[in-house]
Image (cartoon, rainbow, N blue to C red):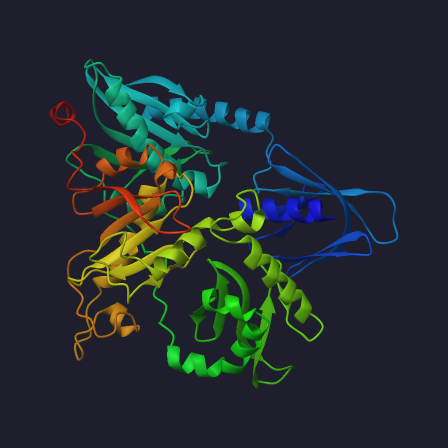
Length: 530
């Protein structure tokens, strides 16, 4: 039974966006659904529930193969086993189907390019995987050539996920750099043309506005695959930023409001462990309890029964395993706390699911307590999480917002594991913070939008753009990150900071690189621009 529990916890720790399938049909999206695993009387019972579905099954075994966790389950009263599958995402196309789609798209793309750019020759379109250079088969790559002039081309078809489409600019920059380095002087690549499906260009547009126009020309096109119509998007048209600024909750009022519930939760935590529990206000109506960034309990304001009288609900559980706290479940919370505090420790077992779960949240919690190792200028008294928030969807990452001693806002993007898209995801957050910061100050108070929403009280913020800090353990900084950073506009002041791998015990920067230290792509490239 313990093996089943560990297998499920491990999979969800590695794949927080997993979905549960039965007979190929999606039953639950684990970003929204909840689960509880009970082991009693020699049986393991899995309870899954969401807004529109409830499922209870006995689990007799698990098999992990090719990134899919298969659960052998039984309905109550039945002996014939059935299979539930946990997969990392919703894309369930077979490899052969994906390959056929991409080959067909290559033919469409070539026709479109020849018709739209008749003065150029289409050269070497391909989707072949090249892991050494980080190129995957989802992106079609090639060149448009006219004599010595050339453009790098990268495109993605409409059947890929939105996340794949959003990643095209990172891969496009790497492709442009590869083309320039392998051109042996016979072709001068003046820039990059990106082609995305119609209606899926919003995030890429906002990023392109902050690329360096002095080192390359940048064009974004949208393709309607049915009509094969290609339309250029204006990089200056950013559209509406999908972001909102959440008002900072009143700490004192919230502490008073949650005092009784907070005391009840903390009574169930051993006294020797209480000082390491982080109590964080999510909003004026929710208080969370965390250990090293992993939320294990929370108090929410709600309504009592069918009336409008306010009431507080306490729940506990890691991730989707959420359970109301009652007299009957108090021992379950005690057991959870005991397991959590014994296993989620700095010197813990790296194979343990509770140790591995949500490493970026652990890193975020460490830096919230001590941000100065990143930069001595950072003010440790003013560090906020996810401000502003992305209004569309959770990006699956944590961001910190701080301020330096000279009043400059500081955007801190964190990655605990290697991520090809670190640079541009940090840019996303920087763009939104900058946008809110530049909103007109209040005529009466002179305060900007952040301070009107309760942040950085008592400070005078600089009118300069924020600084961008990109932070990851040294061995987890993707080799492509610096290449992408070199193509950013000089208006983005960034620092890339690599941490000692033992950051769970103590944060220490082992090396830093700054925008002022990094040269732009080579001079012969600039001379080759048309």
